[in-house]
Length: 267
Image (tube, rainbow, N blue to C red; front, side, top):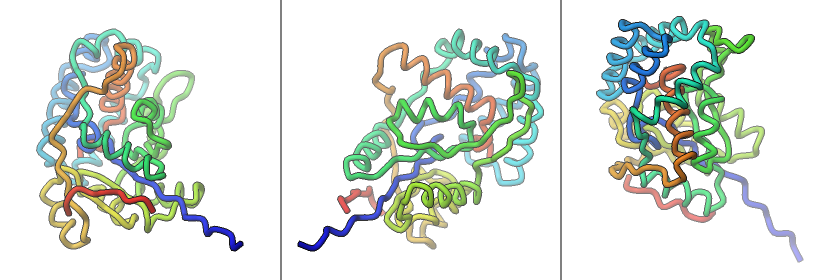
C-alpha cells in the first residue's frame, strides 16, 4: 500500500491591535503611569496625541519612527517590576479591553482546520506572549526590549514592524515547516502590507484607506469586524489581559503610533 502523502503545515498570522483587539487603550493609561511617577504631564499629552494618530490611521512611517524613538527614550530607566505593579493595581479601573468576536471565531476555525495561529505585533514579546496564551495562539512574533538588572534600557533590539514582520514570518516558517503559500495573514494597517504579501491568503481587517487600495492591487480579501466583546474568562484572567495590553501599548506600543469573509477550508 502506498504511503499517504503528508500535507505541509500552514499557519494563520494575526496582527494584534485593531485586528484582534478592537481598539488602542494607550490614552487611558497615561493617568495611572503619571500617578505612579513614570511619566510627566507632557508625556501624557504625547500619549493622547499618539492615541489620536492610531485611531484615525494618520501616522505615516516617518512619524511612527519618530514616535518609536521618543517612546524608547521615555521608558529608559523604568523598573520592570514597578511597571507591572502599577498595571496590576490600577489598569482594571480605567480600561476594559475588548476582543473582536469575529477574530476569536476565525482563530478557532483556523485551528480546527489544523493551522497554527501566530500573533504578530510590534509590542514587546514578554507582553504579547501572555495575551497570545489567553487567545489560544500557538506562537508569537514581537519586538524585543532590552532589560538590564530589572530596568528597561530603552533599546529595542528587534522591531517587529513593516518588512521586519515579513522576514520574521519567513524565519518562523522555515523553523516550523509552514507552507506560506497555504498560509493566511490578517491586518488593519498599510504598514503590514509585507506581512500580507508573504502568505498565499492575505486579508485586511477594517482596513485604512491605503491598505484598501493595496488590497485591490494584491488581490487581498477585505474583512470588517464589528462585534467587540470581552474575553470571557474569569476575573483574574481578565485582569491579566488588561494588564498586558496596557504595558504593551505604553512600553512598546510602536505600531499603535504609526473578498468576502474567508472560509478556511480543510486542506
